[in-house]
Length: 268
Ligand SMILES: Nc1ncnc2c1ncn2[C@@H]1O[C@H](COP(=O)(O)OP(=O)(O)O)[C@@H](O)[C@H]1O
Ligand SMILES: Nc1ccn([C@H]2C[C@H](O)[C@@H](COP(=O)(O)O)O2)c(=O)n1
Image 1 (cartoon, rainbow, N blue to C red):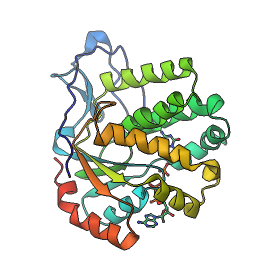
Image 2 (image 1 turned 180 degrees about the vertical axis):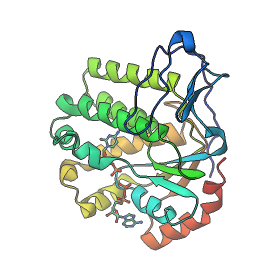
Image 3 (image 1 turned 90 degrees about the vertical axis):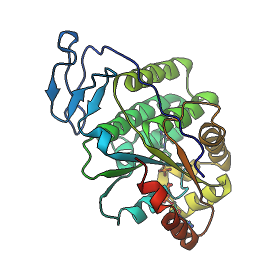
């Protein structure tokens, strides 16, 4: 089921400067030079004033969304065997180890203290993925900078675990990013599961940091996903949504991935 076709409108902005990303060079642009330079993998968009990756229009970006342990990595593994697709898994290893520290683990231990720390780093690493040069015509990436903000930051804030000031700082960062940098998404594939299924799979995966996650946490994440991608009543949806029911066993899931292959890969 394709839920919606809702492309974001771009705004004209005048960024004063940009920065060097973790893996790519982003155009460093001053007001005086706006629209004149073409550096590295980036160019300034003449129509919208955003930083845009060269060749962006010819390629296709699919974001795979879903609750924790819904089966996103398993799905990406399946499609990684297809030629002409590059797969970007979430940089969880970075979230577990930044210069010897583990912000993911710290966040689960004390979300009020460490939520901002983790989500700032998630936002940076997801941005880095969105802007990294594509090495194949189709990119499938696990989650997005959008779900980081609309689901996980929102959940921390709504549940009273993120202080107002932390939420405000993260929100301003996020707004700046989406206003100034082109982050095109052509399709969102939503693996729709029940929170109970995720809880079972989470226990089975047994990631150390996640042992403290109760069913209620997965229910909150689930409700935010449903409001965003199914009811479309909370936040902007940056691309059409393909929903794949994902409570089924592995065999049936692989069958469904195959059935949806065309819809997913034609998302341009
Ligand atoms: N359809 C399925 N049925 C049963 N177990 C599954 C299924 N899909 C994935 N799993 C298992 O559930 C756990 C979480 O899956 P994973 O793909 O890592 O989820 P995610 O990337 O969304 O967190 C893993 O142990 C995986 O082997
Ligand atoms: N913005 C985010 C994104 C993810 N997480 C957490 C949730 C999981 O514990 C872990 C990885 O998620 P998965 O791919 O297994 O669904 O990272 C977060 O807290 N904030």
